[in-house]
Each structure stands twice: as C-alpha cells, then as structure tokens.
Length: 203
Image 1 (cartoon, rainbow, N blue to C red):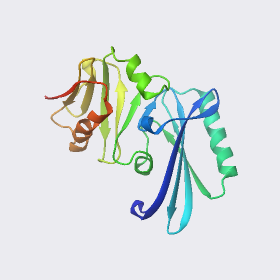
Image 2 (cartoon, rainbow, N blue to C red):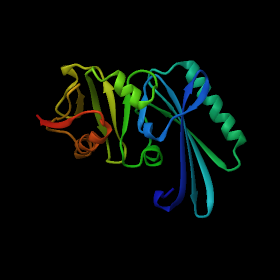
Image 3 (cartoon, rainbow, N blue to C red):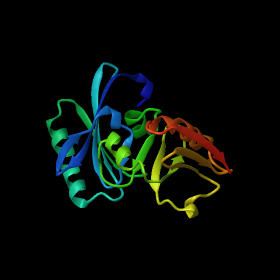
Image 4 (cartoon, one colour):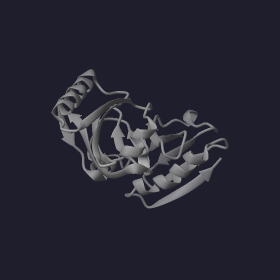
C-alpha cells in the first residue's frame, strides 16, 4: 500500500481494562504502557474503497488475560465489520513501519512502565520521579522512546536517551547515535508539557 494514496482516515485506540475495551482520548495517543494490551482501529479510504486495519499491540509485561481479551475483541470486531479487515499482531518493540505511519504519523511514540492511566494524571503522579527513556529508531518514521531502568550503566555511545527529572528534560546523545534518534529526542520536547525547560547535553 502506498501511504500517500489514502484520502480519508479515522483512528480509534482502546486499552484493555477489566477484559473490556476502554477508549483513550486523542491527547493520549502516542503514549502506551508496557503492562497493557491495546486495540488500534484504523479505517481509511483508498482509491474509492474503504479498508480497516485492527492492530493489537502487546506490551512486554502485559498479562495473558489481557492478551486473550485483546484477541477476543479483535476477532469480534472483525466478524462484525462491514468492510474488509486486516488483523496485525504487534508485540512491543516489533512494530512494523506501517504501524507508525497509521497510528502516530511523524509525532513519535513513547512507551512507559506500568499500567495505563490518562496522560495528564500520569505526569502528575510521576512528577517527582526521575525517568530514563531509550530512543530507538531505524528511520525517522519508526522512532520510539522506551522507558528503561534509571541506571547510568544503561547509557552507551551508540544510542540516544531522554532523562526526565522534576526540573528539566535532558537529551543525552552518544557519539555514534543515528540522526533520526537525535532528531526525535529534540522533537519529543512537546511531550513534556508540564516542565519548565529543555536541556541538550552531548557526550
């Protein structure tokens, strides 16, 4: 599929909560949690035909119960759909390029530790915590930031990292970092809306 040929599109994202589909608001798009499973409902029009892709994204720490509920809802939605449906299973860190294009465009994608909560509440609850995100990319399109353990041993010269503290957000880039990873780190500044300033530090 040539992405440029899409004339209309609609996106809905659900997180599995107590075995049911809980829709998340658009402000929270681009932020997933590694203990959860999500259903991403992408509808689009191409060459005067309507299509539908149902992605089911599985966090690395999601439970079997959530995965099962996710698969159940995808199967049910597929059966009830009036247009052609493609089902795509997406394990965390194995996201295909079309997943980024359909779901996040060029805005970037962040994966946080823990279970889902609305983004504003999440930042408020973790405002006093320090967090470290590893920026991973093979192309400017499919770039994501994954929360990892806050430990200096996780830093290396071949990658880029975002360090979030109460006062600031710091972009740390190694000498061998890809330009896409460094670029996303700079662009990710918009994600941290509750903080005062942004500092760039280069090794």
